[in-house]
Image (cartoon, rainbow, N blue to C red; front, side, top):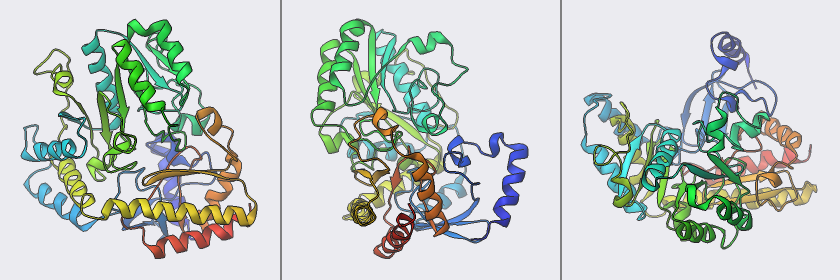
Length: 427
């Protein structure tokens, strides 16, 4: 594949951008080589600056559930842009997007739109503290909730990819307000609450972990957390920034039948534009200003372009068979990869929740971040590079998720599996 233009852009990027990128995992440090530079995308394919085409299973890290440049989304954004890019004044689109979120996720009565997943989780935690009058929070090891202070403790995602155990720049006092426990370990969480329960405002977790690879909750685990928080008067926050509209149309809470107190969202609800949201029962949400005393604001919150893209995406995704097609595509991909791995005697462990999943180079099982960390990252790097050379773009890290979209057709999957068969023979 040609790489002259991307190589030139990479040299230029390193002169003006820190590490050449604006988000660390994009730098390909975990897989070797230099990143390509995207110029366009259509459906399941992204094209780089050299004209190379790749079948895309990263999909902007999850938001593009309809694929790149879906015509309904493009038209919705075009119409919104013609009327103005930002107002800082309420618009009807904010109402309609919130109504659609509430319709799909019944645990949410009221919504607050923000600009990113980080804002959503940071604000939801502030609200939980304000509502309960408590200071401590509990997060799960390997769950990533954005880069807010206090949430970069054992946070998986880019920190796991780059081998950073914890981020400098966070005062010790912040970290001391964040307690941690292993995912899928109810006994460990009970021990945390036995010691600190009266001071814990909330548990926040990815109900399906998506930032240590994809790790699924064991039977009874999420219900156990629900029971524990109720018993101790703490809130349960599901960070569904990734799993919302991916683990199921109604998120992991719909897939596993658990009702959290607060839910954070992002990615899909922006249809590829920057957006986030958090919501829950009115009795909790009404503690936010201007109704209540917990303050949170944002100049671009409810941006008309993002709300237009998100609403268009959710409307298409709710059409009969649309969501199912994304899940079926990933299921078929996973079955094909399992057959290839068996044929070539390469040990793998795969996970899937709806249209998000992961291939670990590990015999498994993988229950938590400690298990995921035992994966063969060097083998994953070889797999990644081999697939990229054959026109398939996967996440440039063993500890990130794979996604499918409505644009991943049978032909797309056949081409992907053909490439995978070639690469597995080299592993």
